[in-house]
Image (cartoon, rainbow, N blue to C red):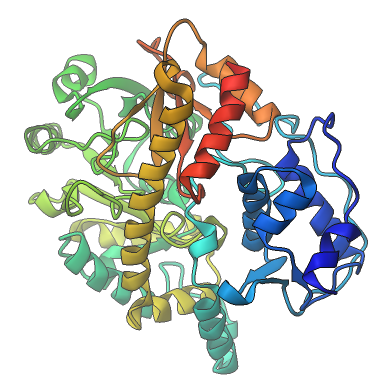
Length: 483
């Protein structure tokens, strides 16, 4: 099929449809591919040509194409154009996707509101939190490493992997952390987990007892409070300011707490970095109280104002900090792979706990990641993403500011993967975030991340999958209409 005829194979768009136009374009291409109307290798129109033919903004079509590319339906080839991905086979068209914002919310708990960080169904929403730039992931390199690993598998590789993780991957992570994050550790201190929740769960079962109190940042990552509460611990909200968690407030509220969970590199969600005096004060408190600190370094690699800051763990001289890292933000969330670095004195204890509560990460996934790190792809990927995110962060902030003006103030952040957009006037962040999700746009409400009443409403919006300023402006127009 020629590129010029691809658009005629698609049903017409319905301007009155509740789905946004980019979503309609996406669904129509996906349906045409699934039904065999568009075949593998067929070239599809350029975004400019299709936008002109359908009477749409170019950014609308580019957004639809980015979703198709991220899910593997189409393959961009630069100046050669974009084609339907080779190897796809026509399948019955799946049932209609749930409308944006209409999917069932996760069950509420008495202690904290639901936290819709990830859209059900696996689709990607503009501004969606917690997602790296999926369109920029080196899928060809990953596929090559995966094929090589599978060809070289031996019978022993089919058995259960070690509960603590593959030794080769633990060694590769320890070497990377020494260079990139300033953490001196041995492979025996590194434990492979299936994600941050699994890492925190190991800490709880290894070191704490029901009824223990734990500091959590306020505002802070909602699943942390939920997991601690379900484990029978008492989360103690500790406010943050421009220097990070206010240690003296934590001491006043719960001097004898047994744990503090912090995000020193980029506070989640406000993105400030924990100052050096606060880092020293936190370590001194843990030493005096015999308490533990979990350092959640979920996106510490991404800092744009200067070089990434050393980890809090690098300052730990008395073995009180447990470092939680993840591959979800630097590779992709579907990998379900993270790691926990514990003090040397606790390694034997965690060996035993892992035999009961290990996350069960498949050995082949660990093996591919090990090769990805050892061959230098991991370091190069982070460098590319750091440059790309700096560009997309600036483009998103400028695009939204140009459209929304005084209605929404984008706070400058030194790093991280999202922006904090303060709302002017009396706009309620939860209501606006809910209306945005109904229109197919993601937004987190800052008030849902806090146990105290926030001083000002704010939206949390990611820039990682916003490809251009023009796209940000078009999305800003949608937000302006809702305001």
